Length: 324
Ligand SMILES: Cc1cc2nc3c(=O)[nH]c(=O)nc-3n(C[C@H](O)[C@H](O)[C@H](O)COP(=O)(O)O)c2cc1C
Image 1: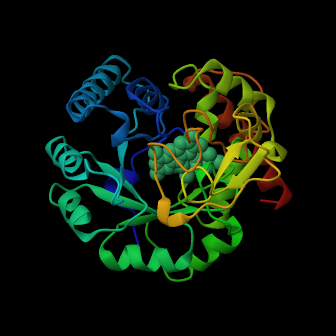
Image 2: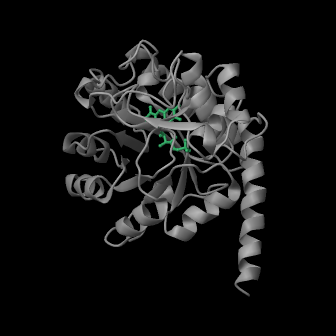
């Protein structure tokens, strides 16, 4: 199957920047698009709802102005993430704005709903739905999603437990549409690995939290730069859904990361609290396992340029290993 037109436009790297609750706003997304990778943010980050209207207009204008001033550079499209969950009471209002601004790519999480897909298709947009297993992948495509984001073990925020090798293979066995791989990608070589596995795009989240353009605290940025895979704790305590978090932030909240209680999933409270006094995302910091290669805070453009060098080097190493 050929990819939808919006995903075939040239990119600096085959990367879709994932939405980051609280941390991704117009500054980060504009920098991602202007570095030539698809940027994204959760609609819920724009508060109140009217701010979403402003952000969407601003992003379109800024990217168009940048493209006009830099005709030789790649400016990528952007995506908006909708949390399709009963706790999201803004979904209808946010979707109306997505339709008004004809957002080219919509990322849905935590629920697959036909009316969302229909709304995006009404103006020619596409929807990528994120899934942690093959069963949810089937459901999303049956309901009308155009593509999938396979969220494998080691991803930041809410994450699955499947190996990326297993998950991509199972999905690719029956689905040849747009597919992104999410989880622990923080190096150019890993972007090439995602393609080698069968994904069209690498879906990257935690790495952006080290950039000056991301809307997270300096302490959070520094903890990511100093941490590696050993410092990531997988727990469902904070939102009711299993996810990966920085050990240091759990300790700072007065909890023992080696002895966290298991939470009751029916008490899920995504994004506005959690099952402890410490608030998920604000006090308990999400991060995936792929942060080891990130040792300095680079502006988005420089981070993408670094990944591009690593990617090109990995590609030529691979071709020479294969004797091509
Ligand atoms: C701090 C943080 C916040 C996140 N917020 C969201 C969100 O609002 N919506 C969403 O669909 N995914 C969210 N994610 C998950 C990402 O979309 C993505 O699956 C993940 O970051 C990819 O793994 P990586 O962090 O190892 O690159 C978040 C991840 C992190 C680390």
